[in-house]
Length: 362
Image 1: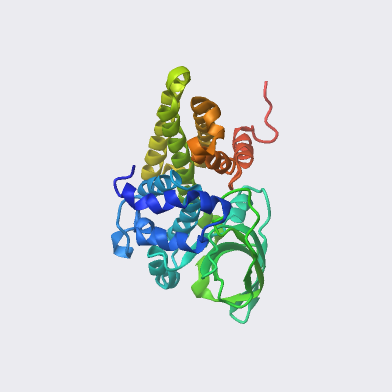
Image 2: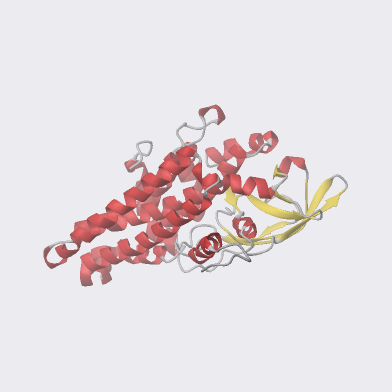
């Protein structure tokens, strides 16, 4: 547990986990509840209104929430990632406009840069076009899948394609003309995460909403935080599954204890590697190392849930005995497909490993 997170302060997420997963709880409360506990301030410089610490402290905070509710952790990731964009943007106007309200949880921030991360890898084209318009920019396009689009108000980051072929990163708010939010997507789980699509039609922005004029520079710069914060979800989900497995492994099921211990050891080793890589700034230029951690952590989540099932046996199918297991099983199904998906990352690693075109191999 992160020393900056009071475990008892997370009881609300524990008690609402099932309802948030099914979409039966008030999703609008998640951001304010996270903000009220000061969780968004972790890893943010004190000079900017945060509590200090480093990026891995924020990862651990998301992991702590993920142990209670992956829906809430998913929202936490979206908000904290947008906060990170504001910490790294050269645009002081944007930071001054939104950061304070995002830190205290009175406003929601969403990362719409999944499309941009795929664009950088050549997987897909940008889905929003920017056209010059009398000293401003007119935007048209769509963001098909974005989390933390709180109905009470949000700001979302997006990469847009300019006519001169240089993409830029912008921030859009739900209150400006031309921005509309769809109904919540019909997800299998994590239904209380305010996940929806954004339609953009003739939306006009000025310089104050440009987070960076060059997405090809900004996205690699923020990608380590984007992915590392995301990995907090995997770390937390694996930890709670392994802890539950250890508690359930009795009698004949005690045979799985060595596997639980080995998996827990590997999990914490990867968490330590993630901490070291962030502290040293290595992932900015060595993205493949971060991709490998992401892939391996996804595998550990699946192993951890399998061990929880093995340790629990038939009782895992009885809600009265282990209601949290069924929710975690569904939550875990999301880990491999969250952008960038495991398939996309494996494709990236394969490209890095492939010899240059024209190379003759024996």
